[in-house]
Image 1 (spheres, rainbow, N blue to C red):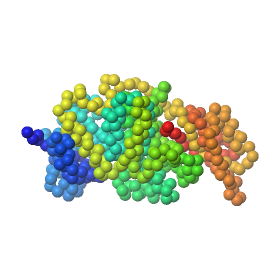
Image 2: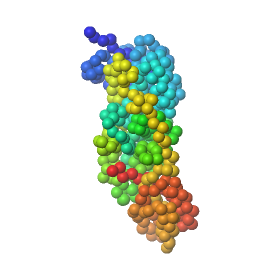
Image 3: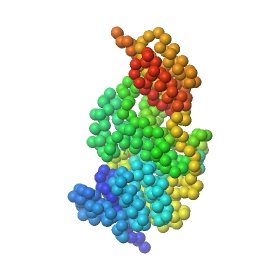
Image 4: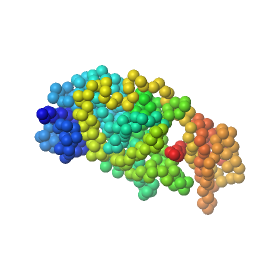
Amino acid sequence: MTMRPINVGLLGIGTVGGGTWTVLNRNREEIQRRAGREIRIAMVADQDVAKAERITGGAATVVADAREVVGHPDIDIVVELIGGYGIAKELVLAAIASGKHVVTANKALLALHGNEIFAAARDRDVMVAFEAAVGGGIPIIKAVREGLTANRIEWIAGIINGTSNFILSEMRAKGLAFATVLKEAQARGYAEADPTFDIEGIDAAHKLTILSALAFGIPMQFEKAYTEGIAKLTQEDIRYAEQLGYRIKLLGITKRTPAGIELRVHPTLIPMRRLIANVEGVMNAILVKGDAVGATMYYGAGAGAEPTASAVVADLVDVTRLLTADPEHRVPHLAFQPDRLAATPVLPMGEVVTSCYLRMRVLDRPGVLADITRVLADRSISIEAMIQREPSEGEEQVDLIMLTHEAREKDVDAAIAAIEKLPVVTAKVTRIRMESLD
Ligand code: HSE
């Protein structure tokens, strides 16, 4: 007996939606052999109806109003690729309320409203799949939620924003200015609609919030994530880091500690010899440390039309395969059974312990180093390495770079404030946190 096709309603046929259309059609036959039945996009909603019609060439019903799709009786799965948390939230909840399964790439929506969305999905016994929300085409959700279930996960550290990694890579390799590279990333379709989400670390924090929930069995808590972007990084910092044997990457880090869970996104110095330090361009890489398996790394294209479509279509196959499974026995949305989520606190940033790179602009005078090391010693911050650039001819000020041993964030904050008050220090101190990832 041949089963009837699964009818998909696609909301948004932009970069990822267009990729989904292409991949699903190009690989139709193989996908059908995998899923056990045909998966076809029956309806497409996009404000640009002409564009949607051009792409679909009459093979799907095109409408301007996505509400027509989410309530349509013929649609089995709604794919939400609109993004943001305004109309997208309304549509996802409406689709769930009409008993549709949902596939979404919307990390912002899940990080902020995931708890509510998953609860609604449980009430209606429908699935909400979101592989494309983190790491584009990398199957990281599946790895953490299913592949690593034997492990107590200790930490996850990832390059999970392609745009900022592209910018950092180009700045380092070609000495290009930040703004030039950002434009290029936007032109290639990597950046979010609002690119500040990429460069301020917000997009990475959305994705990290999802990973943290999956890793530790806690609710989504985006509001507790510490977020710092790459906009303030300079060529000097990139070069000094290199001299010291490090690369600067925008990392999302979530870690289990005895006091609670760390949840933070910030530029990070990582040893150049680590594989992840060599992940360049728009590529993403996520390191997951489990107690049994050790460290595992997942690498691939974190953005772009077809890579992200790869994850969307995989979710469509998953939902199709599991459509008939009893909801109690499906893979739980957030990896842990919903009634077994932990109340482990997410730590305030002040309690986080890391090593740091500190760059100080100082007058080239006797006693300057002693003043600075005293400030650090008074707060039990120990120095691991130091470089002082030779002043150029006639120059009064020099850069002083120190790498510290591990110290509590709030002690480093206090030390930086005290150092900035020293009369010999002429500019704000640059602090970049470090991770050895070993
Ligand atoms: N703007 C995102 C990035 C796209 O640059 O990684 C994928 O979520």
